[in-house]
Image 1 (spheres, helix red, strand yellow):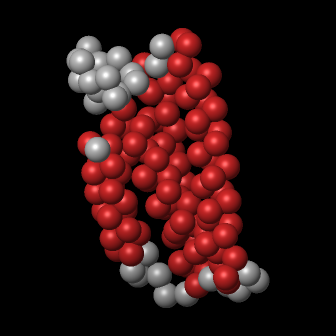
Image 2 (image 1 turned 120 degrees about the vertical axis):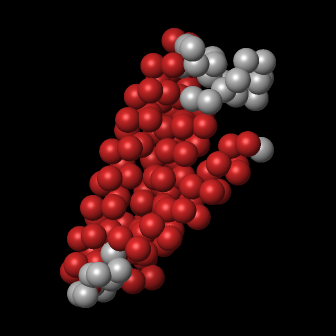
Image 3 (image 1 turned 135 degrees about the horizontal axis):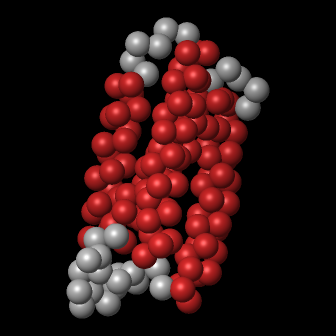
Length: 131
């Protein structure tokens, strides 16, 4: 339950941040560029958190974690392709896809970050507690 609350809060915060950061864009090209930069930033943060989680995971868990991440990437990509499909060929399509990718990436990063907060005795959290 703790993970759902953290991920939900991160998603709500990311949605308002997306709108704020691109508020000064005046053309669709600028919006597309801004949302692409937001996605790249979110992806960099996810990759940093991913590396920390991977290091914390026990050796037998690492293959499972990698499989889960690969499956999540495939789901994210498919979901965002579907979300942007309603604007196929339009100039807004990259923005819709970028926003979706950013939101899902921020949500995943929050989930992975929550795994780094495992407490001693919490059997629902698969990673060992931090030192």
